[in-house]
Length: 109
Image (cartoon, rainbow, N blue to C red):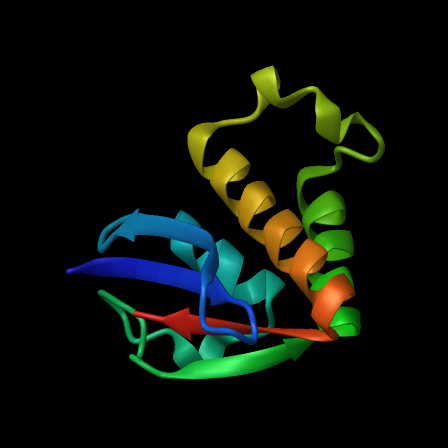
């Protein structure tokens, strides 16, 4: 068991992925940043998916910056933990797709 969270473009192609073991509390950070706690099912995701707008993903990015207090130093990735990096990469990839397509679909497994 674990949390497999993936982002998909409108064609269904996976454009972002984050994996957390069932005991890794950092999974809840990504759920919180996406305001998607209703998809959190304890040891894994609920198995459902949701579509997120550009604004929702931008809000998640801003919340990430506030949570980690990185401000403009997001390029200094050497100082980020593995989970911080995968959360940041996930949000950045989802945001890039949402900016092109207007939204992104996220699956919570």
